[in-house]
Image 1: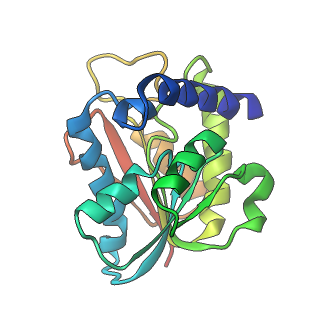
Image 2 (image 1 turned 90 degrees about the vertical axis):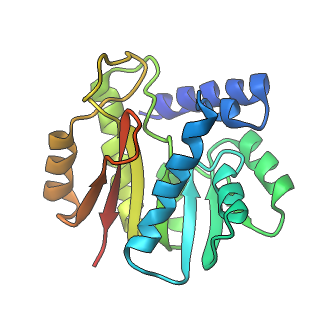
Length: 209
């Protein structure tokens, strides 16, 4: 399974080297869509009407989510970032030296990092690259099971929708039924599906009572 995320990380590092610290550097094709995703991710905190919360940006890249939070003057979020790529973490640390950033493999180090109120995973599961659906599904389910234990209030992730004109072979298109079935049987029945922001993907909030 490790080959899956190391290959995916290699792809994103190539994007960073080619395009630099911008939306193309984390392989988001359209700048106009980026802020929509950030808003939806941050909204998991507003769902519980929390005024203050700790948040881990899992797969933070160069901390564009923190840029969004600061730009929009969103208060009450104690932001930390995590990425398995040292190259991305180095850029994020240079921009935001006062925030905490972790460069760890959650499969190896999940017990070495504190719990957070919320964990958001924006773009972590949207691309599967050359791997099969079953390989990506195995990686996805094992990782979100770990993440569920490391959040105290909830976590959010996005995947590509199957309600599209065509499916791209390199993207991770997952049916709503499959996601719901896994969550109900393995994690919790308390989740919200966001399919209201106009992109060919959806976001899931997995909540803890």
